Length: 402
Image (tube, rainbow, N blue to C red; front, side, top):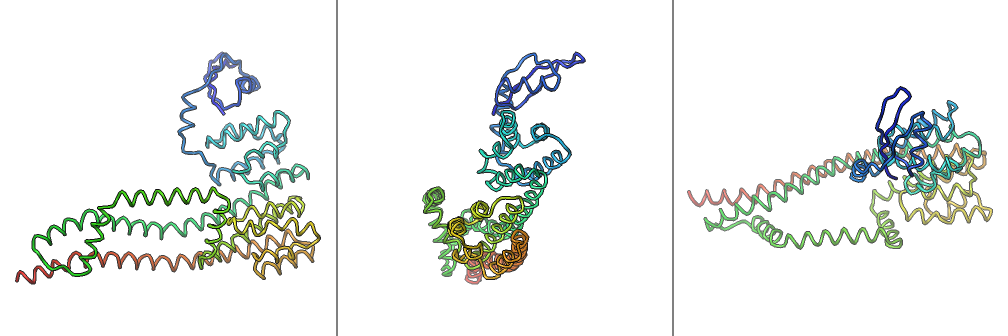
Protein backbone atom coordinates (compact mmCIF):
# COMPACT_ATOMS: atom_id res chain seq x y z
CA UNK A 1 0.00 0.00 0.00
CA UNK A 2 1.52 3.38 -1.01
CA UNK A 3 2.07 6.57 0.96
CA UNK A 4 0.59 9.83 -0.32
CA UNK A 5 1.87 13.33 0.43
CA UNK A 6 -1.05 15.74 0.84
CA UNK A 7 -1.10 19.53 1.02
CA UNK A 8 -4.00 20.53 3.25
CA UNK A 9 -5.68 23.78 4.16
CA UNK A 10 -7.06 23.99 7.69
CA UNK A 11 -10.06 26.07 8.75
CA UNK A 12 -7.80 28.65 10.40
CA UNK A 13 -5.91 29.24 7.12
CA UNK A 14 -2.84 27.15 7.87
CA UNK A 15 -1.37 25.04 5.05
CA UNK A 16 -0.10 21.64 6.17
CA UNK A 17 1.73 18.73 4.56
CA UNK A 18 0.83 15.24 5.75
CA UNK A 19 1.97 11.80 4.62
CA UNK A 20 -0.78 9.18 4.72
CA UNK A 21 -0.91 5.45 3.96
CA UNK A 22 -3.93 4.63 1.78
CA UNK A 23 -4.89 2.20 -1.01
CA UNK A 24 -5.83 4.94 -3.55
CA UNK A 25 -5.71 8.71 -4.15
CA UNK A 26 -9.47 8.93 -3.59
CA UNK A 27 -9.32 7.11 -0.23
CA UNK A 28 -6.56 9.47 0.91
CA UNK A 29 -8.57 12.53 -0.18
CA UNK A 30 -11.76 11.28 1.50
CA UNK A 31 -9.88 10.65 4.75
CA UNK A 32 -8.64 14.23 5.10
CA UNK A 33 -11.92 15.73 3.88
CA UNK A 34 -13.69 13.75 6.62
CA UNK A 35 -11.24 15.31 9.09
CA UNK A 36 -12.37 18.79 8.01
CA UNK A 37 -9.42 19.75 5.80
CA UNK A 38 -9.49 21.17 2.30
CA UNK A 39 -7.24 18.96 0.18
CA UNK A 40 -5.10 21.10 -2.14
CA UNK A 41 -3.05 18.33 -3.75
CA UNK A 42 -2.29 14.64 -3.44
CA UNK A 43 0.78 12.89 -4.82
CA UNK A 44 2.79 9.77 -4.12
CA UNK A 45 5.29 10.14 -1.29
CA UNK A 46 8.21 8.26 -2.85
CA UNK A 47 10.64 9.19 -0.07
CA UNK A 48 8.42 7.60 2.59
CA UNK A 49 7.83 4.63 0.28
CA UNK A 50 11.57 3.95 0.06
CA UNK A 51 11.93 4.20 3.82
CA UNK A 52 9.09 1.71 4.36
CA UNK A 53 10.59 -0.74 1.84
CA UNK A 54 13.94 -0.55 3.63
CA UNK A 55 12.37 -0.82 7.08
CA UNK A 56 13.39 -3.75 9.25
CA UNK A 57 9.86 -3.87 10.74
CA UNK A 58 8.51 -6.32 8.16
CA UNK A 59 7.24 -8.55 10.92
CA UNK A 60 4.60 -7.71 13.45
CA UNK A 61 5.88 -8.39 16.94
CA UNK A 62 3.66 -10.24 19.37
CA UNK A 63 3.54 -7.31 21.77
CA UNK A 64 2.45 -4.93 18.98
CA UNK A 65 -0.40 -7.23 18.00
CA UNK A 66 -1.44 -7.73 21.62
CA UNK A 67 -1.41 -3.96 22.17
CA UNK A 68 -3.52 -3.46 19.04
CA UNK A 69 -6.13 -5.92 20.31
CA UNK A 70 -6.06 -4.30 23.76
CA UNK A 71 -6.82 -0.89 22.25
CA UNK A 72 -9.44 -2.32 19.87
CA UNK A 73 -11.21 -4.05 22.75
CA UNK A 74 -11.21 -0.85 24.84
CA UNK A 75 -12.56 1.32 22.00
CA UNK A 76 -15.30 -1.12 20.95
CA UNK A 77 -16.30 -1.65 24.57
CA UNK A 78 -16.51 2.15 24.99
CA UNK A 79 -19.02 2.31 22.13
CA UNK A 80 -16.78 3.27 19.20
CA UNK A 81 -17.77 1.76 15.82
CA UNK A 82 -15.32 -0.89 14.59
CA UNK A 83 -14.33 1.18 11.54
CA UNK A 84 -13.58 4.27 13.61
CA UNK A 85 -11.65 2.15 16.14
CA UNK A 86 -9.43 0.67 13.42
CA UNK A 87 -8.84 4.11 11.95
CA UNK A 88 -7.87 5.65 15.31
CA UNK A 89 -5.44 2.83 16.11
CA UNK A 90 -3.91 2.84 12.60
CA UNK A 91 -3.15 6.57 12.87
CA UNK A 92 -0.80 6.06 15.81
CA UNK A 93 0.68 2.60 15.12
CA UNK A 94 4.46 2.84 14.63
CA UNK A 95 5.09 -0.56 13.05
CA UNK A 96 4.84 0.16 9.31
CA UNK A 97 3.73 -3.33 8.35
CA UNK A 98 0.98 -3.39 10.97
CA UNK A 99 -0.11 0.09 9.84
CA UNK A 100 -0.36 -1.16 6.25
CA UNK A 101 -2.40 -4.18 7.35
CA UNK A 102 -4.78 -1.97 9.34
CA UNK A 103 -5.21 0.39 6.40
CA UNK A 104 -6.21 -2.58 4.23
CA UNK A 105 -8.62 -3.77 6.92
CA UNK A 106 -10.05 -0.27 7.23
CA UNK A 107 -10.57 -0.08 3.46
CA UNK A 108 -12.32 -3.48 3.37
CA UNK A 109 -14.66 -2.50 6.23
CA UNK A 110 -15.54 0.71 4.37
CA UNK A 111 -16.59 -1.44 1.42
CA UNK A 112 -18.99 -3.53 3.52
CA UNK A 113 -16.89 -6.42 4.84
CA UNK A 114 -16.99 -7.55 8.46
CA UNK A 115 -13.93 -7.33 10.74
CA UNK A 116 -13.25 -11.08 10.48
CA UNK A 117 -13.58 -11.01 6.67
CA UNK A 118 -11.18 -8.05 6.51
CA UNK A 119 -8.53 -9.91 8.52
CA UNK A 120 -9.00 -13.16 6.54
CA UNK A 121 -6.35 -12.29 3.85
CA UNK A 122 -3.76 -12.00 6.65
CA UNK A 123 -4.43 -15.41 8.24
CA UNK A 124 -0.86 -16.56 7.58
CA UNK A 125 0.38 -13.79 9.87
CA UNK A 126 -2.42 -13.64 12.45
CA UNK A 127 -3.58 -17.30 12.16
CA UNK A 128 -7.03 -18.67 11.38
CA UNK A 129 -7.66 -18.81 15.12
CA UNK A 130 -7.83 -15.03 15.29
CA UNK A 131 -10.26 -14.68 12.39
CA UNK A 132 -12.40 -17.54 13.77
CA UNK A 133 -12.54 -15.84 17.18
CA UNK A 134 -13.51 -12.52 15.57
CA UNK A 135 -16.23 -14.24 13.55
CA UNK A 136 -17.61 -15.94 16.66
CA UNK A 137 -17.58 -12.62 18.52
CA UNK A 138 -19.44 -10.89 15.71
CA UNK A 139 -22.06 -13.65 15.52
CA UNK A 140 -22.60 -13.72 19.28
CA UNK A 141 -22.70 -9.92 19.53
CA UNK A 142 -19.97 -9.93 22.19
CA UNK A 143 -16.90 -8.90 20.20
CA UNK A 144 -15.04 -7.08 23.04
CA UNK A 145 -15.17 -10.15 25.31
CA UNK A 146 -13.98 -12.42 22.49
CA UNK A 147 -11.05 -10.09 21.73
CA UNK A 148 -10.23 -10.03 25.46
CA UNK A 149 -10.16 -13.84 25.58
CA UNK A 150 -7.96 -13.99 22.49
CA UNK A 151 -5.60 -11.42 24.01
CA UNK A 152 -5.19 -13.55 27.14
CA UNK A 153 -4.48 -16.53 24.90
CA UNK A 154 -1.94 -14.54 22.83
CA UNK A 155 -0.16 -13.33 25.98
CA UNK A 156 0.28 -16.87 27.30
CA UNK A 157 1.58 -18.12 23.92
CA UNK A 158 3.98 -15.16 23.64
CA UNK A 159 5.19 -15.74 27.20
CA UNK A 160 5.88 -19.42 26.47
CA UNK A 161 7.86 -18.51 23.34
CA UNK A 162 9.84 -15.92 25.30
CA UNK A 163 10.68 -18.50 28.00
CA UNK A 164 12.03 -20.94 25.42
CA UNK A 165 14.06 -18.21 23.69
CA UNK A 166 15.53 -16.95 26.95
CA UNK A 167 16.37 -20.51 28.00
CA UNK A 168 18.32 -21.09 24.81
CA UNK A 169 20.01 -17.66 24.64
CA UNK A 170 22.74 -18.19 27.26
CA UNK A 171 23.88 -21.65 26.09
CA UNK A 172 23.84 -20.44 22.48
CA UNK A 173 26.01 -17.44 23.35
CA UNK A 174 28.49 -19.68 25.15
CA UNK A 175 28.65 -22.08 22.21
CA UNK A 176 29.13 -19.25 19.69
CA UNK A 177 31.86 -17.76 21.87
CA UNK A 178 33.60 -21.15 22.04
CA UNK A 179 33.50 -21.58 18.27
CA UNK A 180 34.75 -18.00 17.76
CA UNK A 181 37.64 -18.67 20.15
CA UNK A 182 38.46 -21.87 18.29
CA UNK A 183 38.43 -20.03 14.95
CA UNK A 184 40.79 -17.31 16.25
CA UNK A 185 43.25 -19.86 17.64
CA UNK A 186 43.23 -21.96 14.46
CA UNK A 187 43.56 -19.07 12.01
CA UNK A 188 45.81 -16.63 13.86
CA UNK A 189 47.53 -18.09 16.93
CA UNK A 190 48.53 -21.58 15.84
CA UNK A 191 50.13 -20.58 12.50
CA UNK A 192 52.52 -18.22 14.34
CA UNK A 193 53.45 -20.89 16.87
CA UNK A 194 53.97 -23.40 14.04
CA UNK A 195 56.66 -21.17 12.54
CA UNK A 196 58.21 -20.77 15.97
CA UNK A 197 58.37 -24.54 16.53
CA UNK A 198 59.75 -25.12 13.04
CA UNK A 199 62.70 -22.80 13.74
CA UNK A 200 63.66 -24.89 16.75
CA UNK A 201 63.15 -28.20 14.91
CA UNK A 202 61.49 -29.52 18.04
CA UNK A 203 59.66 -32.83 18.33
CA UNK A 204 56.04 -31.84 18.84
CA UNK A 205 53.58 -33.74 21.06
CA UNK A 206 50.81 -35.71 19.34
CA UNK A 207 48.13 -33.27 20.51
CA UNK A 208 49.98 -30.30 19.03
CA UNK A 209 50.67 -32.15 15.77
CA UNK A 210 47.03 -33.10 15.37
CA UNK A 211 45.89 -29.55 16.08
CA UNK A 212 48.42 -28.13 13.61
CA UNK A 213 47.26 -30.54 10.89
CA UNK A 214 43.65 -29.64 11.61
CA UNK A 215 44.51 -25.93 11.41
CA UNK A 216 46.24 -26.41 8.03
CA UNK A 217 43.29 -28.42 6.71
CA UNK A 218 40.74 -25.80 7.78
CA UNK A 219 42.75 -22.88 6.39
CA UNK A 220 43.56 -24.75 3.19
CA UNK A 221 39.93 -25.63 2.45
CA UNK A 222 38.04 -22.64 3.83
CA UNK A 223 36.16 -22.11 0.56
CA UNK A 224 35.00 -25.74 0.67
CA UNK A 225 33.62 -25.27 4.19
CA UNK A 226 31.75 -22.11 3.16
CA UNK A 227 30.29 -23.86 0.11
CA UNK A 228 29.29 -26.89 2.20
CA UNK A 229 27.61 -24.68 4.81
CA UNK A 230 25.71 -22.76 2.12
CA UNK A 231 24.65 -26.06 0.52
CA UNK A 232 23.33 -27.39 3.82
CA UNK A 233 21.37 -24.18 4.42
CA UNK A 234 19.84 -24.35 0.94
CA UNK A 235 18.94 -28.03 1.39
CA UNK A 236 17.30 -27.24 4.74
CA UNK A 237 15.30 -24.36 3.20
CA UNK A 238 14.14 -26.56 0.31
CA UNK A 239 13.16 -29.34 2.70
CA UNK A 240 11.05 -26.90 4.73
CA UNK A 241 9.29 -25.78 1.55
CA UNK A 242 8.54 -29.35 0.52
CA UNK A 243 5.61 -30.63 2.57
CA UNK A 244 6.72 -34.27 2.77
CA UNK A 245 10.32 -33.38 3.57
CA UNK A 246 9.16 -30.85 6.18
CA UNK A 247 7.02 -33.48 7.87
CA UNK A 248 10.03 -35.83 7.88
CA UNK A 249 12.14 -33.15 9.59
CA UNK A 250 9.42 -32.47 12.15
CA UNK A 251 9.16 -36.20 12.88
CA UNK A 252 12.93 -36.43 13.43
CA UNK A 253 12.74 -33.52 15.89
CA UNK A 254 10.47 -35.65 18.07
CA UNK A 255 13.20 -38.28 18.41
CA UNK A 256 15.46 -35.89 20.34
CA UNK A 257 15.24 -37.22 23.93
CA UNK A 258 14.26 -34.08 25.87
CA UNK A 259 12.93 -32.24 22.82
CA UNK A 260 10.26 -34.88 22.22
CA UNK A 261 8.67 -34.29 25.62
CA UNK A 262 8.81 -30.50 25.34
CA UNK A 263 7.38 -30.41 21.79
CA UNK A 264 4.64 -32.89 22.63
CA UNK A 265 3.58 -31.07 25.79
CA UNK A 266 3.74 -27.72 23.95
CA UNK A 267 1.44 -29.19 21.29
CA UNK A 268 -0.99 -30.46 23.95
CA UNK A 269 -0.97 -27.11 25.74
CA UNK A 270 -1.50 -25.02 22.60
CA UNK A 271 -4.19 -27.35 21.23
CA UNK A 272 -6.09 -27.29 24.53
CA UNK A 273 -5.78 -23.54 25.05
CA UNK A 274 -6.79 -22.77 21.45
CA UNK A 275 -9.80 -25.08 21.50
CA UNK A 276 -10.83 -23.66 24.89
CA UNK A 277 -10.70 -20.14 23.46
CA UNK A 278 -12.74 -21.10 20.39
CA UNK A 279 -15.39 -23.01 22.37
CA UNK A 280 -15.82 -20.16 24.85
CA UNK A 281 -16.12 -17.74 21.93
CA UNK A 282 -18.95 -19.81 20.49
CA UNK A 283 -17.16 -21.73 17.71
CA UNK A 284 -18.61 -25.27 17.26
CA UNK A 285 -16.44 -28.20 18.36
CA UNK A 286 -16.28 -29.66 14.84
CA UNK A 287 -14.80 -26.44 13.43
CA UNK A 288 -12.71 -25.72 16.50
CA UNK A 289 -10.66 -28.94 16.55
CA UNK A 290 -9.41 -28.34 13.02
CA UNK A 291 -8.24 -24.84 13.89
CA UNK A 292 -6.74 -25.96 17.21
CA UNK A 293 -4.70 -28.64 15.42
CA UNK A 294 -3.10 -25.95 13.27
CA UNK A 295 -1.90 -24.14 16.42
CA UNK A 296 0.43 -27.03 17.29
CA UNK A 297 4.12 -26.05 16.92
CA UNK A 298 5.10 -29.37 15.28
CA UNK A 299 3.62 -30.06 11.83
CA UNK A 300 4.00 -33.83 12.22
CA UNK A 301 1.77 -33.73 15.28
CA UNK A 302 -0.63 -31.49 13.36
CA UNK A 303 -0.83 -34.14 10.65
CA UNK A 304 -1.50 -36.82 13.29
CA UNK A 305 -4.51 -34.84 14.56
CA UNK A 306 -5.88 -34.05 11.08
CA UNK A 307 -8.43 -36.89 11.45
CA UNK A 308 -10.12 -35.31 14.49
CA UNK A 309 -12.94 -33.50 12.60
CA UNK A 310 -13.84 -36.68 10.69
CA UNK A 311 -13.86 -38.79 13.88
CA UNK A 312 -16.10 -36.30 15.71
CA UNK A 313 -18.37 -36.07 12.68
CA UNK A 314 -18.77 -39.86 12.86
CA UNK A 315 -20.16 -39.58 16.38
CA UNK A 316 -17.05 -40.06 18.54
CA UNK A 317 -16.37 -37.86 21.55
CA UNK A 318 -13.31 -35.59 21.60
CA UNK A 319 -11.47 -37.82 24.09
CA UNK A 320 -12.13 -40.93 21.99
CA UNK A 321 -10.91 -39.19 18.85
CA UNK A 322 -7.77 -37.95 20.63
CA UNK A 323 -6.88 -41.47 21.80
CA UNK A 324 -6.59 -42.58 18.17
CA UNK A 325 -4.03 -39.87 17.37
CA UNK A 326 -1.54 -41.18 19.94
CA UNK A 327 -0.43 -37.63 20.71
CA UNK A 328 -2.16 -36.80 23.99
CA UNK A 329 -0.86 -38.31 27.26
CA UNK A 330 -3.23 -40.20 29.61
CA UNK A 331 -3.56 -37.30 32.09
CA UNK A 332 -4.77 -34.90 29.40
CA UNK A 333 -7.21 -37.50 28.03
CA UNK A 334 -8.66 -38.14 31.49
CA UNK A 335 -9.14 -34.41 32.14
CA UNK A 336 -10.81 -33.89 28.76
CA UNK A 337 -13.11 -36.87 29.40
CA UNK A 338 -14.12 -35.34 32.74
CA UNK A 339 -14.79 -32.02 31.00
CA UNK A 340 -17.07 -33.75 28.49
CA UNK A 341 -19.09 -35.60 31.15
CA UNK A 342 -19.44 -32.47 33.30
CA UNK A 343 -20.44 -30.26 30.34
CA UNK A 344 -17.44 -28.00 31.02
CA UNK A 345 -15.16 -28.93 28.15
CA UNK A 346 -13.93 -25.38 27.52
CA UNK A 347 -12.99 -24.82 31.16
CA UNK A 348 -11.30 -28.23 31.49
CA UNK A 349 -9.27 -27.68 28.29
CA UNK A 350 -7.98 -24.46 29.85
CA UNK A 351 -6.99 -26.44 32.95
CA UNK A 352 -5.16 -28.98 30.75
CA UNK A 353 -3.24 -26.13 29.09
CA UNK A 354 -2.22 -24.65 32.45
CA UNK A 355 -1.07 -28.04 33.78
CA UNK A 356 1.17 -28.63 30.78
CA UNK A 357 2.41 -25.03 30.73
CA UNK A 358 3.76 -25.58 34.24
CA UNK A 359 5.27 -28.91 33.17
CA UNK A 360 6.97 -27.26 30.18
CA UNK A 361 8.39 -24.50 32.37
CA UNK A 362 9.74 -27.08 34.80
CA UNK A 363 11.39 -29.03 31.97
CA UNK A 364 12.87 -25.87 30.48
CA UNK A 365 14.36 -24.94 33.86
CA UNK A 366 15.81 -28.45 34.14
CA UNK A 367 17.20 -28.21 30.61
CA UNK A 368 18.86 -24.86 31.34
CA UNK A 369 20.32 -26.11 34.63
CA UNK A 370 21.87 -29.05 32.74
CA UNK A 371 23.00 -27.35 29.55
CA UNK A 372 24.78 -24.41 31.23
CA UNK A 373 27.37 -26.48 33.15
CA UNK A 374 27.82 -28.81 30.16
CA UNK A 375 28.54 -25.82 27.91
CA UNK A 376 30.93 -24.29 30.44
CA UNK A 377 32.76 -27.61 30.83
CA UNK A 378 33.00 -27.90 27.02
CA UNK A 379 34.50 -24.41 26.83
CA UNK A 380 36.94 -25.21 29.65
CA UNK A 381 38.09 -28.43 27.99
CA UNK A 382 38.46 -26.64 24.64
CA UNK A 383 40.55 -23.84 26.11
CA UNK A 384 42.63 -26.32 28.14
CA UNK A 385 43.42 -28.39 25.02
CA UNK A 386 44.40 -25.25 23.14
CA UNK A 387 46.69 -24.06 25.93
CA UNK A 388 48.30 -27.48 26.33
CA UNK A 389 48.90 -27.85 22.59
CA UNK A 390 50.56 -24.41 22.48
CA UNK A 391 52.58 -24.34 25.70
CA UNK A 392 53.72 -27.96 26.20
CA UNK A 393 56.10 -27.73 23.18
CA UNK A 394 57.47 -24.44 24.58
CA UNK A 395 58.25 -26.16 27.89
CA UNK A 396 59.98 -28.99 26.00
CA UNK A 397 62.08 -26.48 24.04
CA UNK A 398 63.12 -24.76 27.27
CA UNK A 399 64.16 -28.10 28.76
CA UNK A 400 66.22 -28.94 25.66
CA UNK A 401 67.85 -25.51 25.70
CA UNK A 402 68.95 -26.02 29.31
